[in-house]
Length: 608
Ligand code: AGP
Image (cartoon, rainbow, N blue to C red; front, side, top):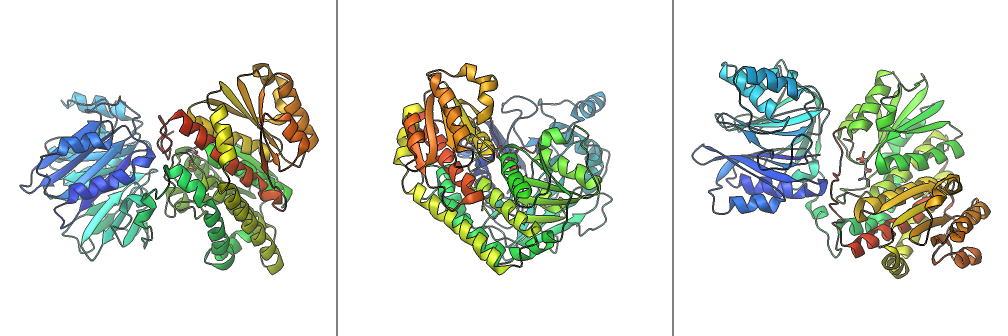
């Protein structure tokens, strides 16, 4: 996912403001960056460089950066290699554009424009939009119409921001990709971005435009930002809300990495979630979803969010006895799934911008069923597209490897199960459940205060050839999630496996260089122990995660992490998951990888 920031206002420091916004979006992952601005002589200046933001800043040293209007971009390459030329903004002598998403028909558009004599400078799909708009402008079409007409020709999910030097104004538009705008009506500043977090502390009000709404940022506008339909009639198709993100979330504080900070934030966030849903404004959204009476629940998500959905299945089937099907959104959307009239579509997502998850939701909506999100970003595309939303209240998650969002997603699903059980109005039921949430927070606090054993184990095994995370029942998705964390940040091969499955083939891989991180939970204990014995018999290294003081588990394990399952019941998987988060974090730390911004990864995958 690329980072987009645009600024228009009285400050002559617009370039630094945009660079600050881009810096906040670094966590999303990128491989090049650039800015376009209109200098004090009303000339457009363009600078862009492959590599980190620092490379771009070096280009700007000594340059006259006095400018009131600026757009900037951090690119995560989809079409075209990582080169200065392919970096955004893409500009010519008339205007400059930045893009997030994919233009699926770029090849055809470029061929048509080349026949008209256009010469492309980059390998990117994005440049075709620049030249489409320019082509219309050269024919005398006014800028807003040129953008609107060109946008209609674009296929695929994209958001664009256009800088028009002739009037010193900014335009923006999107379809199926994130775009947010904001104003500071005290300082008369207008900003636009792909992520509300880039605008934190700079604006008082946020606007989330719907698809195909053209934004016009202009000092001449009474409200700084005007909103139009593609036929250029004014529109109200946008959501607006007070900006309540604080800037300090962008600091690591005493932590070496955002990921570690976010692991440590979990107890407080769990307490905050309970308060929000049981004692605050969240209760109303729970009562609304409580009215839904689905015969089945279809869960669709990607990555970590999908594993949260798999844990949630255990709630919906175990507690509510509602048949629940969990599918990877990238699979669900292409296999012509059976969607029945009284199904409930449930979509789990931290960003609310994951392309496959959005597509799965659109399919369910088209099929006419109710759709509910379990989402972190209020105002995100998923948030706006679903009939109901349950916010996970995880705050901004900067680490690319999702930690606190997973915990909050699962707990929010547990609250949905409570709502669907019809027991939400039972005060005793709520008190009991809130007590379990609080116990989970307490157990995680205790775990975080005693990490030496985990750290030492990580140091002993981080260099091993491969890792099998194993678990049974609801601990199978925890094994999947634990393996994903390690893959993402330590770049080592790891697999999550149902403990009972290893003997059906994968056990052939077990040897003294393979580590089995075995979750030995009280449920199905005997079966799990025999699986551990199977691995041990083949010289596998065993890291057992099980009840404190469990003799058999301790005896069989080369390394044992004792935890206390008591009283946590259906929430215990989240406690074990924090052990896996810490194991992955410290193994990556010993490996020396870029934990917060792992190679090849983006925080939100807005492309297919
Ligand atoms: C999780 O650690 C990964 N970064 C990734 O799997 C992520 O969970 C997935 O891309 C889904 O993102 P979303 O929750 O924003 O939809």
